[in-house]
Image (tube, rainbow, N blue to C red; front, side):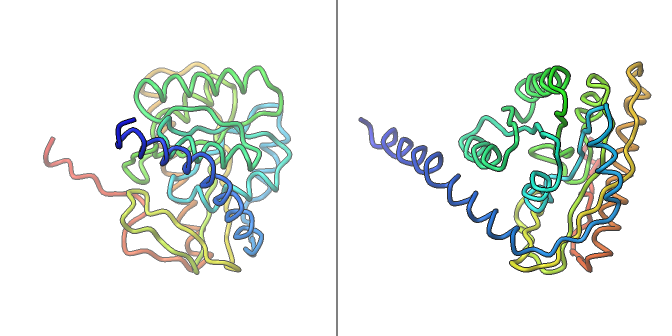
Length: 246
C-alpha cells in the first residue's frame, strides 16, 4: 500500500472512530456546566407546538453553543446538514449522537440535493423541524443564503431565528465564522426571535425580501444576545464584503 494511502486510511480511522466519541463527551460535559439564560423562549415553545414545522435559523459561528441545548430542551426532532468531507462525516456522527437527524451536503449541487432531502423528511414526518446555519459552510459570515426561505416555503414551516452568546468564551478568530466556544461554567444566553411566516406562492423579488428579513432579524437578535451576555468582538457580526472588485 502506498504511504499516502496508508496515512489517509489512518487519518480516516481516527477521525471517524475516536474524534466523534471524544467530541461528543466534550460537548456533553461542557454544556452540562453552562448556566443557561433564555430570551424569547415563548417563540420556541410556540413553534415546536404548532402544526407547521419550525425551521430554525442561526449563524454558523454560534452552532457549537446551540447544539446540546436545542436537543435537550425541546420535544421536536431536528434535521440538520453536514458536508460530505471527512470533517463533515465526523461532525455528522457527533450530531447524530446528540439526537439530530443529519443530511449530507454543504454547497453547490450537494447542498441543493441535501435541502431537497431535508424538505422531504420534514414533509413526511410529523414533529420534524430543521436547523440551518444560514450563512452556509463557507460564508460570508452573517450573510443569510436563500436556502432557509425555500425550505420554509416548501415545507409550510416558519423561520425561527435563534442565537447564542456568552461573555466568557473563546473566539476562533482565524476561522471565517469566528466560532464562539463558551468556557466551562460560563453563563450562556440563548435568544429566540419572532417566527417569520413564509407564503407558498412567492416570486423572485418576494423571496429576496424574505431573505433580507431573516438576515435583518437574525442580526438584530444577535446584537441583543451579545448585549445581554456582555460579549463583544473586534469584528462585526456581519462580514463586510468588498464590492469594489466586482
